Length: 424
Image (cartoon, rainbow, N blue to C red; front, side, top):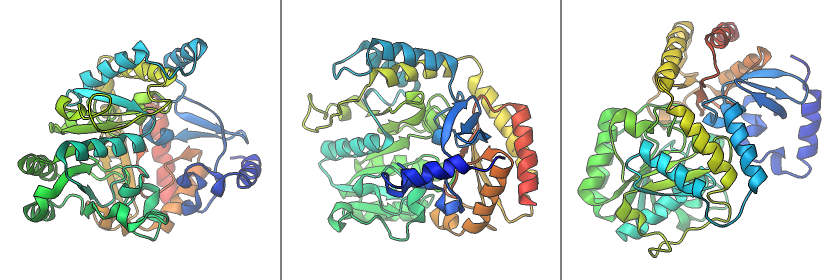
């Protein structure tokens, strides 16, 4: 690997105008003891920095590129859209076409609305749920990250896991007093809370597979309990499938596990590499939204025609025969080999479909408390060693890694060899 001289200079310059030199905290790579890569281009399974180093990418823009970077057909659709005009602030047919495709994949989303980010999607879904139920209390789970809205930064995962405070500076207590945080994967505590307070709960929001404290797969009993209890007490069940949507199956985790929520937030893959997300759910709930109902939500760039075109082409390719079966088969082969490599090394391998996390932890990781016991210094050393091998894994102990269609068997074999050498 060439020395990252140009990236270092670019980072120094960025810090003069951008707080921390980055527009999202984890990109600074402070938690892994190095400085950021500044990327010049990406193609298929690779990213190339401005120093000319090319890396196999296992972050894939945090799970966005299930088809790989710079998919030719997706890029072509986006370019064609730009040539017609990049934004109108007026409806386009492509918004409806993509909405219909999303609803085909997620039948629980009888009506949906596009926004620009996962944060907007979850924030808006919660507002609608509160408007529909007339209640205030939101139940979330430790280590589940649902974006950076004030009332959601309570015991959250992702980059927030590295902040020592319970939430974030600048968030008044009044903003979070209606947010109740319970342990993930704990049916007993959830049942007890609903017995005591269920009549006041507007919504329960969760990642149906946690991806922001690292990949943590829930028990089916836990998922079923969220569905049964919200139904029993008249609360809204919201699945945050910003990462798992179109990743674990065309219909996301709810298809994979056979559990249908009342509302869903999707993002990342749905925009095909452009800023886009959506929230939706039962028609009677979504009827609360203005202009039909009293719950307000809006966005100048919502339903942006470039993002809609890229998303439509992406979802079209995901419907190709055998796409998910092939991705799952390749991922399973990789995971099986990886299990053998990490065995006996004080590392827990958590995975679901084409997502995985190596926790530098002696004990199984089933919730946020387990994840927080991981050795972040060991992970940081592992990250830097992988970088030396030309592999960019997600730069946090509390994030997932993503296998795409473009991670061929040859690439995965090299990655396995490099992980083995890095751990040794």
